[in-house]
Each structure stands twice: as structure tokens, then as C-alpha cells.
Length: 581
Image (cartoon, rainbow, N blue to C red):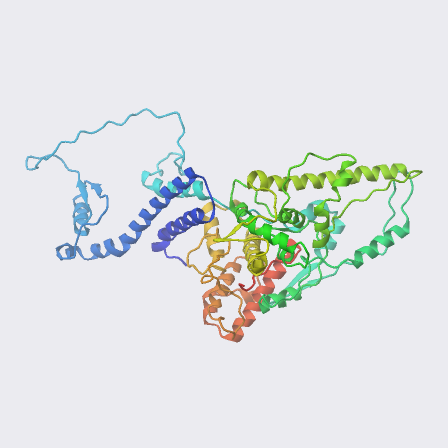
């Protein structure tokens, strides 16, 4: 717990870190940069004054005769005005310049006359910005002391120049509760149950089984569908493999605790709402497709803008579906005219349809029939519905194209491009060497964002103030950041190999001792989560003294609880941290 003595200093340090990370991580305009720089200077001076007060002034107040020593000097501060003799004596003892206001007497030596400047009593009709806040609980205005304005206005200024928040990750349970009938809600709610006891969390997901028969649907012509049509469709569904967002494949790059927790999750049914990701999902860059080099090379070109859009309030940074990430990695950002009618069928056979098929997206090309006869009305309705679906898909594609073209100011991808990766120019032939690093980047970014999104979802942070947001995000950053004071803007992983630490080493392997710090931070974050098992409600500082066996058991239980909680709310597997390449 932060003592009352250090509370003001910790708030100043938190605001200063927020501003510095805002300057360092996010591009901004010249005017915004100047305002941020001036605000950083103001915060630095206030923080220096706070440190100087407790390190110098307090000690001088405790020893009033210190001003007679040789090392006593006047402090480099602005000074103070006072009309109190005792305050004047204290300011003299600690070495602070002062102006002593007193009545004129015959014994007073006047060195210079200063004439007061009268203050106008006319108030401006134009509202000031930022506005001076008043105490809402005081109707008479007595408690609105001018001495309270600087600290409150400092917070308002910080909020105005660097109030950046991660967009929410919508859970599948939200859409299902609003769109599904009550009977289906109860069925889906039973598909995932979490049992907790003695700190061990076990997940049991009931596997959804397709119904053996469905009610026949009435067609537009008054004819019922054929039974063999359902049989054919059901066999096609059972033959399709589970999507990579719903099933885990063990990897040596992932910690043992993560492999165990993810493998224990039963195969998940397709959620009512398609899974979304803040950054390209790792399985898109780890596939064996012949377009992988194309994806990687274009990702090198757009990855900085993908980081920027997550936190930049001027850009729509909502998580994207897999289909949209496919279109973004493909790199064709040309803006086309709207399609309608027969041209929609041609558009359905575009490049992204093949990409969706490779990534396991169920939405594929739309087929229509040109048969004539008694079913011509059905075929006509099918064509109309297909054209509408393709038109909607084309509109979604154009939104992604507009995001990268108009907002990101990027042209379509060409193989001869050589984008910068750090200080190096990367050609399409050199991109294979960066595959492991890029895979680590998408893992880390998604892991950081998903942990923050789950925390915000569980705690309902929508009504929190900015200061409370920053304090919580700074606590979350300790789960992956080596710095003692980091802001929530550090979702972007650090590329400096000296600062990168894999935090999920299993004891007694080499490097497991420094991981206690990050596991303790993860424990501290979870203490406010609802339904946390009693075995995991403990003092995070005690984790630093755990032995190897107790540390491994705690790590497994913590990761298992995180995985089951994430699956319960978002209905797909979370992205895990991996070792740095």
C-alpha cells in the first residue's frame, strides 16, 4: 500500500510516465507535441519540488540551526509571500526566498516603491478551458479554495493531452444474450462451467452436438426442403477441422503451464459472435500457406500503423475479425465502387475468398444456380440474397481499405517494396529471417491487449476516472514490463533484447527466479477479479519467497484460471506469450 506521505508523489510520477510514453510510443502533431513537452516540464518541476521537500526541507525544519553551517545554501526556488513572523523565520531557516509583507513604520527602510495593479471586477463571458473545477457537494462555494485548483487542474491537463484507452473486446456472451432465444441461451450457458476448489481450477466444457434432425423450412413456393439436403450439410460440418482459434496445438515456444492449461480446454463450439483480435492472430503468420512470405513482408510495412491504431484516439482501433486481418495482410487497399446485382457474384470470387478458406473462415464464395423451371423463384431469391451478402462483404473490405489508405496513408502492397524494420531495409527475400521475431511480436501484443480487455470486462471500468484507469493499467504493465513504473501504453513489446524477459519459465530451469516478480504482479492483478478461487487469494509479496515446487503449482493454477475465465467470457482461446526469438 502507498503511504499517505508518498501518495501525491506517486500520482505525479504516474502522470509523468503517462505523458512520456505518449510522446515515445504514439506519433502526434507538432502542436500536440509542444503541449505535451510543456506539460512534462511542469510535471517534472512539481515532482522535483516534492522530492526536494522531503529530502532537504523536512530535515532543515527539524534542525533550525542548520543555516549556520558551511554547507547551508539558499534553495533555487521561486520563493514565497507571507505576513506571518513565524513563517518568515521558518523560511529563513530552511533557505527559501521570501517576501515579508508588514505594516510601514518609522524604523523600516524603504528601498523601492511598488504600486499595486488593480484587478478588474468584470468577468469575461467566454468560458475558460480547461475549466476550473468546483466542489460539487458545496453549493455555497465555501470549499472551493484556490489552493485546491493547481492539483485538480494538473490532472485535467494530463487527461486532456494523453487520455488514451484500449478499446473493449466484445465477448460472444454479450451478443448471444441479446440475439438468441431463452432456450438457446440456457443451452449455451451450460456449455462452459468452471469448478473451483483449494486453488485448483478445472474447466469442463460440454461439447455441443448437432441435432439429428431439424424442422423442415417452408420455401417461398410452398415446398419443403429435401431431407438429404440436411444430411449432406451435416456431414460437411463434421468433416471440417476445428478452427485454430478454438483448439490449441502444443509448442515448445510456449511455457509448460500455458500448454497444459490450453490443452485441457475441450474443443469449443463456434461462438455466436466471430472472434476478434487487436493484432493479427499468430496462426495467420504461422501457417504453411504459399502466401506466408507475402503476408510477412506486408506486415513489416504496416505493423507500426497496426500498433498505432490500437491506442490512437483519432483512429478507429476496435479489434478486427480474422477476415479483415486477412484482407489487411493481403495488402490490396484499392478503393472500388459499390457492387450490386450480377457484378456481386464476380466479386465473391476475389482474393480474400481464397484467403478465408486457408485460414478456416466459414464464410466462403457464394454460389447461385441458373436453373429455370418451377424453382426459378427460389433461385431468384437465392441470387438476391447472395448478391446482398457479397455486397455487404465488399463494403466491409472497402472499410479496411479506407482505414489503411486514407487514415494510414498507405498504398497497396508491391513485392519490390523495401519497408523499414528498425534501421534495416527488408526485401521480400529477407523476410524469412524475421518470421520468428514477427511471430513473437503478434503473440506479445495480443497477450497484453487481451489481458487488459479481460480485466476491464471483469471490473466494468467504463465509469472509472482517468486517474483510476492509469493506476490500474500501470499495475497491469508490471505483468510483462521490467520497469518499476510503466504506463498502460506499453502494449507494444520492446525490441531491445536486453529488456525482453520470458516470464513463464518453469522451476528449476535457468531464469525462473526473476519470473517470481511477474507472477506476483499477475497475482496482484487477479485479486480484484470476481470468482477468484480461495486458494489464489493471497498476498502477492509472499510469492517472492516461494520455493520451486510451490512456485510451479501456483503458476499452473494462475494460468489455468486465466484461460478458463477468458474462454468463458470471449468463447475462444486466448493468445499466449512466447519466448523471444
